[in-house]
Picture 1 (cartoon, one colour):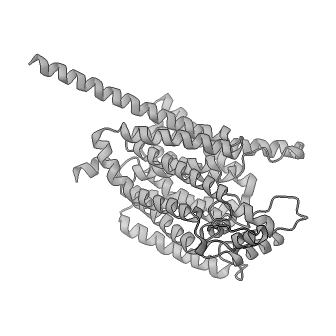
Picture 2 (cartoon, one colour; picture 1 turned 30 degrees about the vertical axis):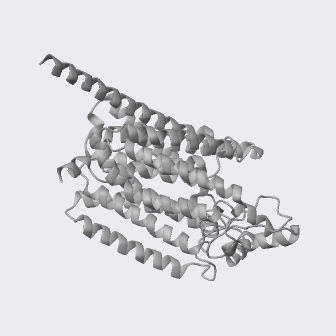
Picture 3 (cartoon, helix red, strand yellow; picture 1 turned 180 degrees about the vertical axis):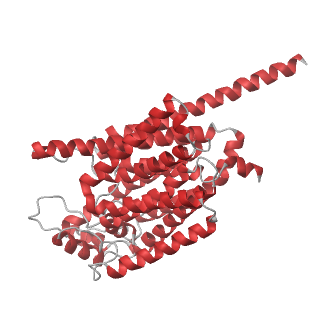
Length: 447
């Protein structure tokens, strides 16, 4: 019937229109990731506002524009990650709420000093905790958008490229600063804060993609493929150089762990070892290494969250005092900077900071929540590892997620630097891409 042909044509136009819009959203998310580099040079409140607005828009657009088959796969895939993230958001909201019975003692002191009744909260700095909540929600929006977009491997490659090029830009900034700093010491500090941590996101992704491309013989597919592989290798060299120049000793272990995990995934895929046997072996090795490191650490008398730090003695003493006074419910997300001046030496010129990022996070979120979050995050890394081992092709996305998470966690126990807004967005996009490609959509549909 003529009418049937017209209906089919309309449907075809609608499908192509939807596909075009999804690719437009993919390009927009890639632009956001690339934009995190220039945003790292602006004031943090401005960066938080821009990232929050863009990530929220991309979240709704990416989910609404998915094709029915992709949307059903995405809905099944996102649930556990979404549940864990919402628990984090709920805990930050609880810390902000006026709850006098669990409020930090600082509110009682302020009430007595001002001679007025104050309804305190767990958080000692409500504005900082609110800013942290916005950052977490922005990261969650980016994670969900990246997961939705990356259910299709071609779109996932766009996200991977954006993460790689942005991480390379951060690395280039570190190298330029190092070169200029030797000539003009006053110009040191130009590179974005914690730029070295971004290398821990880009290096595993670059290694995994390079190994996958070489294993599948993609280097001979043409000029475009050869140029792409060459750029990936250049990016890896830049990030490795920047990491070693900035913090060679401290960053070597997190980088090495990420590289080892990528190598183990590749060896498991090449051998006849089952995925289950491989993950059990990795868990056993990780448990032995962790137990050895904890038992043999030099500063065994210090809290575990800061005992691997190489910070100066005065910073270590201040961090110990802070953690000794922190209640089990923490002091509020993002609020550590408001509390540290009360513990720091007034004669100290630099802004006070905790000995390690893990110590700061423990103080803010509370010990029970912090250690539970660490366990859940490591479970996600194990899930990505299994996904990378079991996949046929496009395994590099899940492999990068499996390597990035332990690397960032180890760096948090060693370095005082914390990911900025831009780095957090890059990490969210990288793990969202890994979550989407952990399981093949075609295999899931077949099952």
